[in-house]
Amino acid sequence: MRVVREPSELLEALERARSEAERSFGSADCILEKYVEAAKHVEMQVLGDRHGRAICLWERDCSVQRRHQKIVEETPCPWLSEDMRQRMAATAVRIVELIGYEGAGTVEFVVDVAAGAYYFLEVNARLQVEHPITEEVTGLDLVSLQLFVAAGSRLSSLPALTTIPRNGHAIECRLCAEDPTRNFLPERGIIRLWRPAPDTPDTRFETAIQSGSEVSIHFDPMIAKVVVWAPTRLLAVEKMIRTLAQTACVGVRTNQLFLQSCLAHRAFRNPAYTTSFIPENLDGLLRSPYGDEVQAEALRQLAPVAACLFLRHLRGRTRLAGPFKDVRRGFRNQRCDPVNRHVDVVVMERGATEKGEGKGEGAPPNASLRRPQVCIWQQATLDGAHRRDQDIYRFQYVALPPPVDDDAQTTPAKAVTARYNALSAAVRNTTSSSEAPTSQAVLHSLVRIPPPEGAARTDCLAATVSLAVDGRKLVAHLATRALDGLDDSQPGRPQRVWAHLPAVGTWAEYGVYGMLTWAEGLREEVVNASAEGGGAAVAGKRVIKAPMPCRVLGVLKKDGEEVKEGENAMVVESMKMEMSIVAPANGRFRTVWRKGDAVADGEILCRIE
Image (cartoon, rainbow, N blue to C red):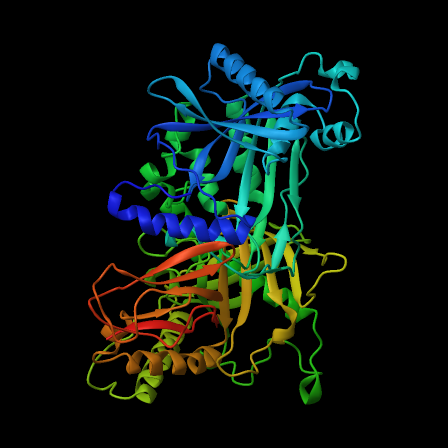
């Protein structure tokens, strides 16, 4: 679907729509229709048999859409009056009877909220993605009914269909592998941990993913459907928010936090919301519904502690090999040196952060959140004030100063040395100071999450951790790769931990380093930063890379042709969606790709010289 507001936009929009239709459905036919600005998308579930009988199983409100595609559906539609509901249902039944439709289907309407009128849109001759919410409210199994009429049976023979019930309220959310802050660009990758919310009545998940599943570019970005039912709409909304927050889908960027923002937004609570709900409220929807400060505290201060304790627990259960197998863990041969402590340097690699800084869920976080979090650990001695079945740790946060850019740091080697020395000095000053505050972490429980049966990948260890940091409680679902070795033996390589925090409804990825591995890892970072000096950073803005593996559908400009900023230069396709590649600046267009070429993730699509 494409919205055309200016005559000059029609040709390109028609070409894109025809191309997508041809590849997805085998037909390039398109329909031109009036665009109703303040509209609801309301559809009627219908069922017809070969004997001329048709029934309507009430409506679904599908007005929460991005790119004109549904992501939240609910039933009943809270805006419809009973009179309009009955009239729309009668219209849907009449259409089905006129064409002699057989099977389950959907008659879709555009409802003009301002005028109080409705217009026929189309008939979908199949069960829709969102059919489960109709099942929840009516108590009827639509798949069984579809098979029933396909076998030639009569709907009139079923007494349960004499009066179609309508009980309570149901909502469905489509969990999609996409980045809302990048115009809902599809994402791919490996799901490190999939853990649905704990079983609760009237909640269902429909998905094929599990821990270790790979989200590829060859399918639609929807990876799961989450459906809830409750006696009222308000209870259903609250239940869905809670279910999404408690579901761990870690490792691939998704719209999970965005869906929670949609449901919690005040405009959604108004039954008159329209298909413009997301475009009109996008800035607010891209912020955390739990508050930026609450989210930042959880991601910056609490989750790193959970990640470190998780790794300590795993290392404590792993036997050392070689000549050091009999050396107790935590041994230091220079224990009087203040820097000879167990020090973890934790860096947030990806995570959901505030809009405008962090680029959304699973994206690289802003500079303040990515600044290394340094923890100096010391196992506490249990006393009578705490239960014996709890692990108690004391640690100190180290305030690491930001890197200094001066004439002394003229080479990457000097820059790395200066930053390591700053870390070493900060650790020494903290451990030797009697005024440095000490924090306490109480590990209440650590419960391993077993891998799914038949998982595609079994190289991840996962657990649910419950702890309190200085009295602030936190529950986190954590995963780490077992093949990383759980040690600091590989220079510059951190142990990666993925952490989902139900309290803020999202996840983040952390790199946990030792002091030396952190310094080793700085080399590549500093060298890359040095290479971006001069005009390289500006030149980088004129280079467009493939955001994910894709196929070139068209090269709209000739190599060497002059282009203007904002002009469409190429068209690529990935995950059943076409994307226009726009020139970021005025200049000369350069590319080596042709129509039909496959481009790998991160490869350069084109340059503007």
